[in-house]
Length: 366
Image (cartoon, rainbow, N blue to C red; front, side, top):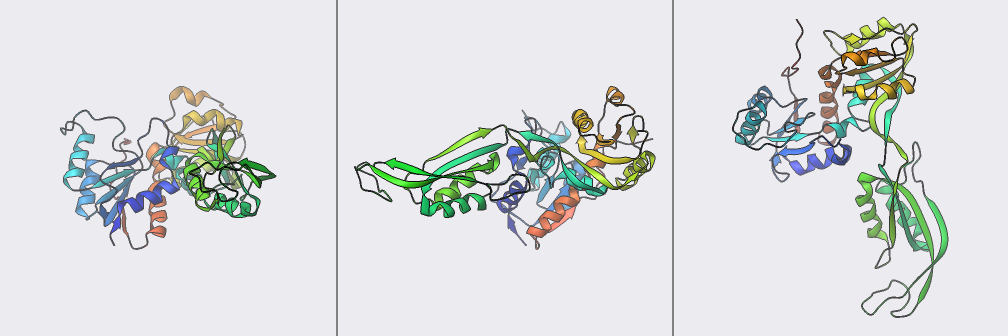
């Protein structure tokens, strides 16, 4: 079944908004037009010449990758690098390329949730939640319209605090206004001062949903000119951030848990520092390069921290108190392909999807 690429992009960016990516990243549509129709997508971690060939051979016209093909600007496209070659071949074969990288890392249902499932972790939560990702919206409306306006705010994504929804604060008061010559007042008369019984409604909104919430409010608000305020908040937003932490259903001896990592992630080798002297119960994780979260994992009282790309000197940290495991970048993120396939299949059941069969792991072991 053919699908407009814009529909797939809308789904992916509703799941993991591009605004949640890290500053160095380049997620989103890299090659192609949102208006083009696509028939089949290939899902991969990385875009390589082998993956391009695979996509063409199997009739795919879209590649959905975790890692962006283009991380930095290209001053020329001559085929002198692997990235340039891939760009040329993608355009030549009418292949659209979309990347969903650190924005997928930073949501509760993303890369780390998949890694947590592979390691059988339960009671998971974000390890390092972000601050500055929340706004407070305040608006004022006639009291009899307050319920309708509140529900519009909630339905568009406002009012969520932890495990609670439909959260707001409401205060009765009086609003005053005078419609000028060209106004069309909902209540009162032109050029006459009017006092209206109003309700002040306050609710909390993730930054990436502010526009949708404001638009939903404007759709149902009765006033011609709607008064509202948007305040930045420094509150921690527990649903967005880096890494994840959870527990094992039953504690395991350290060596047994390390063998579990190796088996469940298909690792040829794993690297680790000193094993802790007690059983493993609490586990922190970060798919890909996550050593920047070592201190957060230790503060959260993790017994083991599983990630990748750990440097030599970083293995000295917290020896004997927290075991640091480098299980490989590819190995800790490979479940992303199955995650994306599952999510897309549920929402586009008749759209053809293929998980890449190419082994694109650039790291080999002798």
